[in-house]
Length: 93
Image: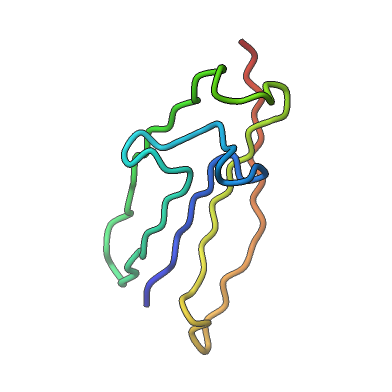
């Protein structure tokens, strides 16, 4: 089976107001189907993101929230995917 992976950058903002973009494609989200097979090595994706120029947005105080979701496509029968992970970091500048 596959897993549907989705990364959302600055997800609490409307799409047109997002302050963080991926370098490749200049989008605020990333989607990928990840193939699962027994005995395969771990899979790694490196994504580079950037903060848009401060002149391009008004909100400079609220946190930038990122989310990563993994889901079974179409709710594959007999398989359950669950769990909660919270990673939070505050970087001063």
